[in-house]
Length: 403
Image 1: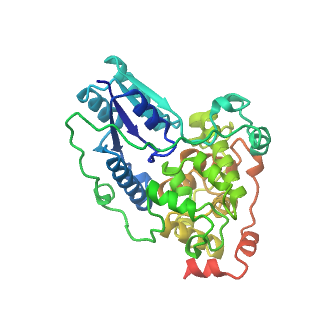
Image 2: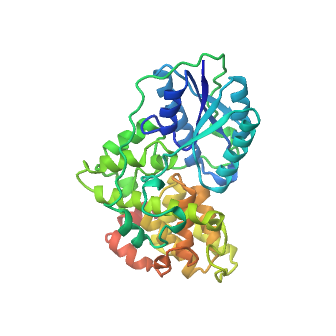
Image 3: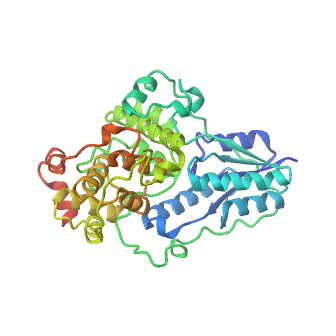
């Protein structure tokens, strides 16, 4: 009997899951597992709660198919290796990640597995496009999003998403599934209050995708944002699934497709430039001039700048973990261009606060706004007063979040 480990990472779904499909196809026994490796100083209560709900939903769905989801806490490279030895699994299937810490995890696990003749088998699933389908290698991906869009959009076909499995092989090896941990185990000192507007999990994500045209004034009163982004970020929704479903939307389908395209561009920039996306100099050779002003930074974080639209956006971010793309750029631009603070402070705060945090989407966006990224088009002043008048002419949004 052949056995394999199915290591869920940021792909917490059954639909369009290449690692799941390949493991079921090639092994008689598949042992699904999720490993909590929480860094409390870099994750918000919103995102961690969303993650826990997503893992719980995944376990529920796997059990309905005759399988289960093992829950572990620790370093994935150690936990997965030990589990592979215990279950005598020949292969470990997982989604390949591209940013530093995740790459270090998978590389370390791969080395451990090789010492015992086992194999780590990677799959893809985070992007809309397969890099092998693009008309250029990643190293030659255009730095300009406009150029990237011209070379890819409506030219490179998007592969059809994979179906969800109708059944799963049972786990024959004796195992201890373990309970899903409580959020307080990881965030004992965090403020748990807030408006939890998003429920995690593939089930909720598919429901949100189906109801995408229905407006929720608490979330989208002024924004042109993509309110399904938390599920895409956590891997509860496949970009390809969202892409094809967008053609049936009565309103906003084109915006959704452009968002997915831009998300791929940011991820490709992360692949192209690696750790440089986290450096203060970015991909340039200079450090942008900035001032050290802790009070100004604290006021920006708390929404106490005195600028109504900036403060409203930061209040919404702090109370929900989410703001739209246009407001993210507006408050980031204010920190960089008006307050003249270190852009990495803002990027790190977004990382620790956003419910839909994604390394490439976050850090490359900040890079570009700071003028040290690949796309110089973003290095400009955004007039926050113009943004406020355009998107919130009656002041409904500002009153809602500044009250």
